[in-house]
Length: 166
Image (tube, rainbow, N blue to C red):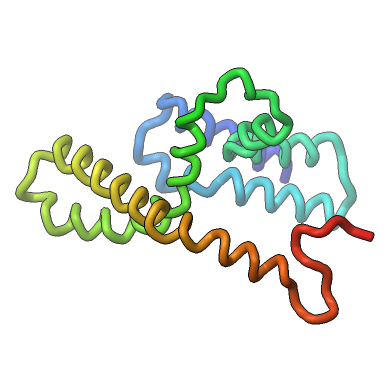
């Protein structure tokens, strides 16, 4: 089974590097394959115990799925790359996630045959970024302090969310 998982992971990386034709993604499902591969490796670990092979599969799969980048950020290994405007871009990621797919697909479906594709993608990206910024600055930031106070009060019999464990 690990041979199959390694082959799938290698093919995923090859596809992402542009080395395989687009049609192969129908079989590889590269958007989600690192998660499937890591999940199958975790299942093997659960059933048969951890081996260097299965642990490496999980690590490499999650690395391919960008978790390696997030781990580097969490470990503060990227602090020299930081710029103040990165925080703004980071703050826009969740509202952008909320609006881009649905509204973007509607725009593409309605205007895709009538507008130059490059212009349509660029304009949709600009519009979605603007909507995300409006959500962040108009909804998230004003409501965040109130939500934090509500969470800090906690539920009866429970310590506040931000309190240190006893």
